[in-house]
Length: 208
Image (cartoon, rainbow, N blue to C red):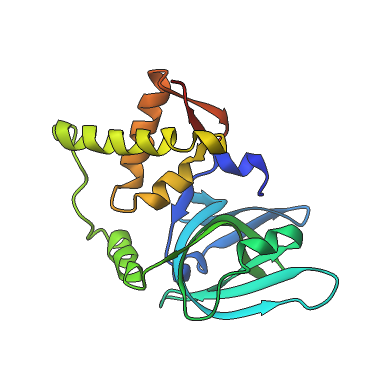
């Protein structure tokens, strides 16, 4: 699992080609963040097709996957016990990835936290979303729709009690038809109302 401190950082949605334009910022050879426009990016949420995979065969366990979204390619790299996050994936599949950016040997790559299979059509959905052609966001006046969304989020949290809660990123990935901003907004309200709590950064549980 990635360091808990990374749970505090927003997983920005980007096309891979845009990420490759960013400038890695380091200090004492340690990667700090990717500078892209006015953003300092540590975690990302990307969608891509798996075009290549390499698994180690020696004592040192590691797995490298290359993903392509039509705008560029980037690698996912897992080491040690984390290779299980990539073990059931294969070339040709489409995946949604949330992970932490790393930079080594002049290469920017992703250390994946969550990798989830999705439909190939979702590549186009993400492209339109980032180009600003997505469905208009729900406004504060659409009370019934907001209540329905709130109920969906709360159900996800209640149903995760046996697992000790659920990560906000998981809720976002399981409700891709709802804007990330709206999900974060409703979770913040549930926290403020004392209906849910945050046992650790980025993870929520029901207080019922």
